[in-house]
Structure formats: structure tokens, C-alpha cells
Length: 361
Image (cartoon, rainbow, N blue to C red; front, side, top):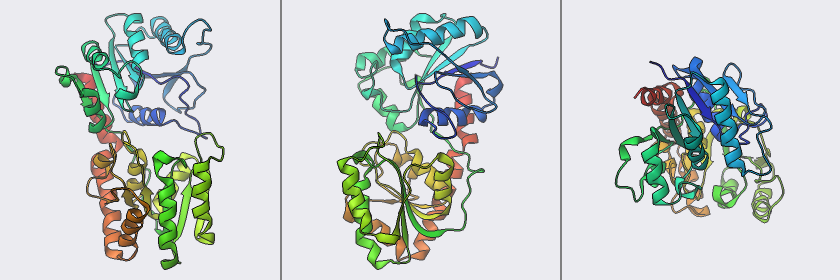
């Protein structure tokens, strides 16, 4: 019998034309290409436009006398009891504490799953080994967006490994295809330390004088859309590039993909352990040659299809970029390798089918 699925988004997760939260974007992609699309409902708390997908917005779920995570779990459970009589699977996205509450609130015949999009060891309800052991005992299955995230979850556990699966994020490679490449190097991301924007801006100043026909495109804002000290320092380097640099500020997801489809090179210089590295995958899909750090899940995404700069310093980034800038054959090879790997391993149809297979178990 096919499962009937409720996907529980994190509270306040957004999905609109202007802004798409990372978790909502991934689960919308999975649902659109799932064999069980017609049997799936996405539950969240914000106004959202998921198009043809069945989305339920929970309103007035907050209660002043309850912690938000419990109030949200209670509202989800109430909707499922009152309207989701055919629901057999509930998949909680990235919130182990909400999973725990739903385990208490939902009927025992409903199978509960937990989908980690970030490191479980940083999350309330999964930080301790005892927490993760309990999750493996109660969950019907646990999905992780990368093998890196899976191994983080399994750290210290002796049993339960068979319930914990790697399901990579995917992308529609048929919708986003490479275009005629421009002599541009693009960075997409917030201007914060974890994303490595400052050493990249410094690296640009090293190579720009030697390649005057190349341009540098920076698409990003800081977390709160305010100018931080880190952003000021980054801008100071970028300002030295003059007309060679174009700083876009925030752009929506469609415009991001357009940048990747046109740019010859994309740089993703994260200095923290990325759970997956969706920006890397988007750049690969657009056929850009990728220079990145390889931290966390990024290494699984890029494989040997990109240029790694480790340890990540301004000079290492400049060296990796210059290898591509002075060697057209290598540049074209890396563009083709990146695109081919995205299509072969991360097309949404492939990974959605993998998730569907796990749902049938």
C-alpha cells in the first residue's frame, strides 16, 4: 500500500517568490518528483505558494503559555487527527524536539520519520548520544542530507545504524541548463565569516589586475541586512576592483540560477562544515567550474569535479582560480565535469526515487 505522507516544515519556514527557505525548497522539489505527490501534504506555519502541491498553513498556533516547539507540534498533531485520517507517514524536517513531542501526541499507528538538514549534534533534542539513541529506537527511519550528516548523527551510537539513511538533496537539471559562458566569477552567499567571503574578496584583488577582461559578481547580504564589520571589510577589498566587480545584494533563487548558468566560474569558499552544499550543486548544475573548500558535505557533492582550496586562505583561493583562468582546456573540462556529475548523481528524479524507495520499506 502506498504511504500517505505529511511533511512537517520547521516553524516559520518560508516559501515565496521572494524568498525560499532551504528546507522548504528541498522538500518542494522532492514532493514534485515523488511517486506519492498526490498522497502528500506539506504542513507549515507561514503563507506560502507551493503551486500544485497540497500545502496547509497552520494559523494561530502559538500559545503564550507553551514553548513554541510544543505549541507547533500540538497544532500539527491536531490537524492530522482532524483532517489527515489517511496519513500513515509523518516526516519531521530538521526539528528533533518537535519529533519528540509528536511521538507523544500522534496515534501509535502513524510512522514517524526525522529528516536532518543540519548537524544533529547542534540541535536541541539530538545533541547527546542518549538523545540520538532514543531517536533511532522510536523513529521508523532517519534521513540525512549527506553522509557527513549521517556520520555526525551516528557518532557514539552502537545500534540503530540500519535506520539512518543518506538521502542527498537534488535539483532539476533539466530546468536549469548551462548558457553561453561569460568571463565572470560569481559568489553567492551571505557576507559572513562562515561563508568565507572576506578571503575570497582579498583573493579577487590578487588576480584582478592580471585578468582585466574578467569580472567578479558578488550576490549576497549579511544575515540581518545590516552592514557588519565583516561586511565592511569585505566591501573594502571589493571596492578596489572598480568596474571589474558587480555587487548585486540579495537576489531571488531564479536569479541565482541564472548567474550560475552564465558564469564561467563559481566560488563557494565555506569555512565551516556545510551540511550538504546546495550552492555547490546549483553551480555545478549551471555548468560553472567550481572552486570550493570541500568542508562537510561539500566534498560529497563536488567529488573530483572541482578545484579545492585547502586550507582556505586568500592565496589558496587565488591560486585555484588562476589555474582555471590561465588554462582554457582545464576550465572547460571542469565545467563539463561539474555539469555531468550534477546530472548523473543529483538530478531530483534520481534522489526523489531513492527517498520513495525508503518510504516503501
